[in-house]
Image (cartoon, rainbow, N blue to C red; front, side, top):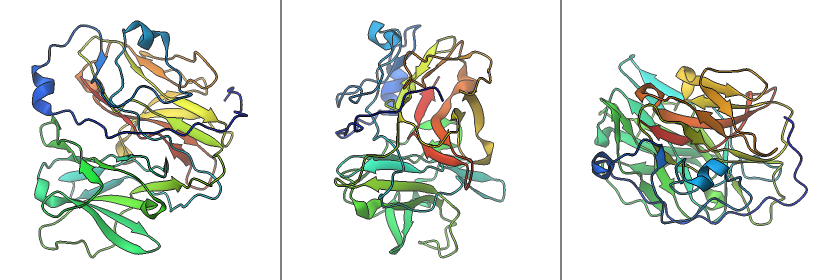
Length: 316
């Protein structure tokens, strides 16, 4: 990949509660010609991450909170990584990233989920599967779930809704595979076998430093048509000898955006201001570019996908 192996331990990143952005505020805000990020009152870029001159100059947005870095490492509590799409009768789809993602103890985990073709709150819940069995994590219809907070539901486009959640103060008990589930209205809790979801790893305080971190510090980017947008990704460490790639969306329908192996894509360029910088610029964007973008590291086999960032939502 051409980036130097880090000889110093990877930094620990302390997260504070992200600030949800309400749809009505976004709709009333005046948007300048240059792309901008939704502001955050939580924290700046995490230590060790690259801040491009574009960000320093104010021509690219500021991050809405920094998600925890992601990385599989030896000694971590882990689970089986899986695919990321659920569907039913071709009428709706539940899209969530495959992972794996990693969060350190005490930090905040962002789990993303988009439901295509349905915006019914009382039909959506989150379920975690681990060696300890199956557990309901969050239910949009009822219940009290300490430490779990939904993002403010935002209609991305007609009948496309965001059911992402935050899990605060993560512990090793949060390791497992998370499923964003649309209920059929007959069963309060799905009894059938769940499709594969988002794999989550938890780094304990005494664990060795991972061989790779993927940091996507931007949760949400707001832009207008014609803007140039920077999507930030910092990769610390080496991992397996496979490329870093960018995708938009999740599941079988995800779209390849950029490959750092030298494959070019229209209107997309790599920043590469340092060996750790895997940020990209999207030029001349339109509403068709809206979606969630993931910075992903691959391996040969099994499973192909080695590690994923927590994603950046672009709204145009």
